[in-house]
Length: 400
Ligand code: AMP
Ligand code: MG
Image (tube, rainbow, N blue to C red):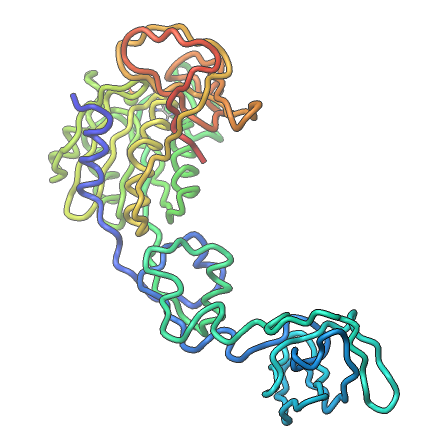
């Protein structure tokens, strides 16, 4: 039986980023990871530009106020044609290039128009460079502006657009297939007969994988027979990067999943993990395909997804940091319990006097998905006795 950290290390050791592809710059790149450095093809801004509507001046002309002759008007998108000489200025607008000779902009609010094409400067302390955004201040031609590995957020899309990137090299989302197993399961929209229950894990795991960015294929439900499992698993294995099975991985007579997987050439790397919920957790590989056999209890399946599957999906999607993301936070209420294994308990973050605190949720154990539902964290308790007072620091795994 492996510790959680050992099992995670085994998963990560077998996960590789998918081969990068080129995609048109559009919102479909959101959340994906940039696969190559993106560099500036020119300076930005490409010229000294005005940050205000106003007048380009020689700052030395304006000490204590001045009256200047307006020699031309330059809107954004146009070029000045005249250099600003002594006693002169150019009217310009936000984004317009600064004309030669000028070294500052006086904003319109600090001026008064006069007759005869003249303007009074009422700003008595014009500083060189004021309201000028100098050429190359944001980036220089050749600068690596977004390094490979950058997660593409909306600002990155804007930056790439500014670089003129029509296409973006990015890692594809992983392809995931989900198969629920169990003789007792009926599809969620059907009426369960005696002894039957609805399939919660399938839709939940599909949703977890979708939330992690994956392109997901729902393989439905397989009965607990070697033949049906073999057929469904084989159908799933070939066209996916990650196959997630739920149920049938424990030691019961009908827990056939690990045996069938090995028959199909899946090399096992993890069979059991010292954790609660979720001790029976299978992880194996066939070629590049990662195969997870999660326990059937819905909360066990959820916790194993967050601790092992999501980090693998992040690596496949090109992330340098697989997670899971953890934090140390004060407890919002006392905890007193004894656990035979390290325990991951549904919990909720709440604002505290300073920062955040974590409150364990009422929870009836591995089958209690309803109890887990509001959770945005898992409170991590070590094996043995935990007697913790409010305010004591505890470790949490962050969900979402
Ligand atoms: P197993 O890991 O197959 O032994 O299942 C453990 C428990 O989880 C059993 O009580 C199952 O009925 C339940 N279970 C298994 N699969 C599902 C599922 N897809 N949805 C809801 N409960 C399930
Ligand atoms: Mg079962």
